[in-house]
Amino acid sequence: MSGAIAPCPGNWEYEHVVNFNEYLTSRSTRILQVLRSADNTQKESFATDTRLLHGALFFGLTPPYFDYYAGHYRGEKFRCLDAYEVQVSGDPRVGHQAVTVPMEMVQMGLQVGNVVNQLDFHFGVPSKIFSKEDKLLRAIELAAALFVYFLEVHPYANGNGHMGRFLLQSLLGRYGLYFNANFNMHPRPKDPAYTSAISQYRNGNKGPLHVLLLNCL
Image (tube, rainbow, N blue to C red; front, side):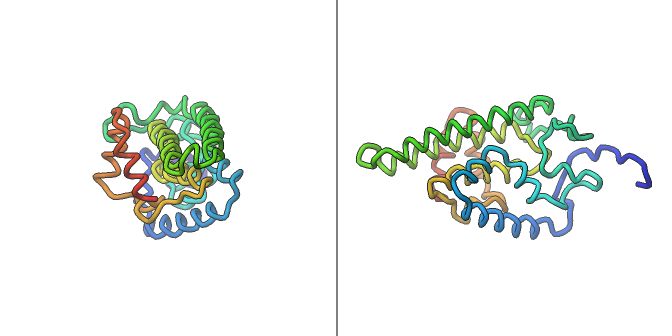
């Protein structure tokens, strides 16, 4: 740019980068390997703030001169990212205003802690009192609620689905629950079931998403 300031790039589409699929597939595999070897404190930390992993996953896949789009929320104090607005599939509930995102993610981090406390309690209760099946269902219910809210906020300029699925896996992984190949960070789970389940959840029907997640464990 020879000293010129690059204009805001508009919508960030990592798919425009050559070999993006290979990069994301290999990086996702590595990140999930790191997650499995992490202790429970680290897994909670990963779920509380996904920015470090977002940066690792999307490094080199951002628009030229805007490498900070990877690893930072919309609304943070970076040029163009501070006012980056998104809308997904025409649903006005998805994509909160950039100015509110950083504080909303702080609050969501606190909710992650609340969920962990609840699940630690449930999984610590003897199975003859609270069965393994009941524990599993409770974990899915609480994790799914955080997942859908994360996607509603849509904190990143791109890669929100990847990080939402990583958040889910970080939480559930604390209790030895890991998804199979049908629910990876990358590639995206198959449609129409995946998108439909999320949409139905937002509209009050939580069952399809719960069933989808259970079937992928």
